[in-house]
Length: 111
Image (cartoon, rainbow, N blue to C red):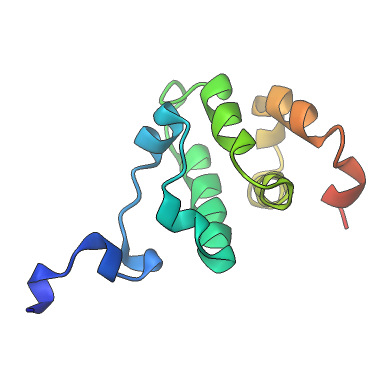
């Protein structure tokens, strides 16, 4: 096998192009991202940067909420923690999701 014939699955997660727009629209996290705690952690990190960098209207809050519901609670908390760390003012934009998801996790968010 040549280097050019490697499939996406053969590449490390950090080298893979992740189609976050499609993932958010479908509301499904690809299984290969769920197989490892480390990869899921990296997925959440990259998801935060995606939602902060794309123009408004590329995804809806209900679509993002549906995707977040597929994550374990620790990853949901991590998403909002990273969102707050990377762009504190963005929480205004994400307030409906933030308050919906964080109501039960609020004590954990700032620990």
